[in-house]
Length: 400
Image (tube, rainbow, N blue to C red; front, side, top):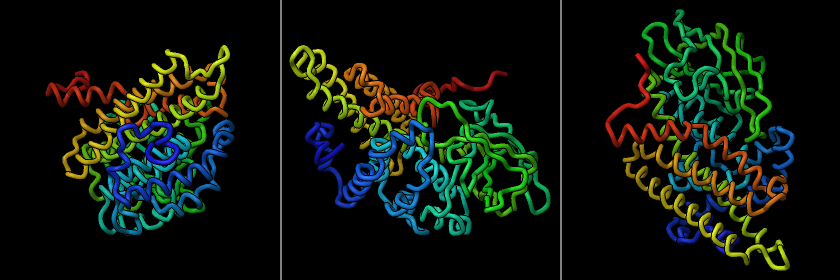
């Protein structure tokens, strides 16, 4: 997005690199270098085979970015802007790897940081920061996605334990995570509560996970369907401050901020690939980039990327000031998901038939953006959150 080859390709058209601190730039460049060296050269193959690159986790850990803005327990305490830039670079490198990291660092560690007690934070975050323990976030269910507030997984108190029963779906990292956050409705008061399942080498009695197959996007990150049959969790593993769906929503608002930045990464990668291709590809004896229709398309793609960058940079400032609302996070996620998907589609069009080949990258980014468009709240759900803010009317209240 900013500096070196990215400046030469015009993806920092409004010179946003000049707004970065040295610390933010160092984090961005560290992750960018990692993606250029370790990720981009190999991830097409993993994506094609729908295999997760487990051997890359130790290299990932060396980046020291897990936990992002968390300031203690071995976490890096990065700025909100640096956290967004990390999302851009990881998505530019590979969307599957970015989702793996977002689930572990944003949803997993973020939930513990926001809703755990100090003892719980000290207990789980250090190993997760070192990526010795990987986290996941079990909220979505087979029958409840956009209406997850109606979740059916239950939690029953039994002495010094809670007993969990239910099924979760689309749980990133769920098949191999060590720290499994499960959201369930208490049979005592009907409220949604958060629990941590610690899966040791021998597993957890009553807990099983099956990797979902047949995906058209984000193929190298494993989502799983989780089944919980009388899974017993110690009472001290109930997250202290996770006592209602409003608490769950605090985490979702925070992670939608990160997903908004992710769309920029996919769009930048696709734009750069399309621009490079158009300059090199000869059509009717002249570069494809010399045709007016192609230049018009490239100009509009760049305008959308710049639009997304400016919105997310401003959102980072609002978050720094402690003023970011759920609607503001939703507007950014809605905007970047829609615009980035179109940029990727335009890039695929510029590449013609070659646009569907993995080696040219844009097909993978386009397929992955289809997933980004849906997860962390669909485009429609985000628009209704914004609509509620501007009208004062709840448009997606349950039918009575």
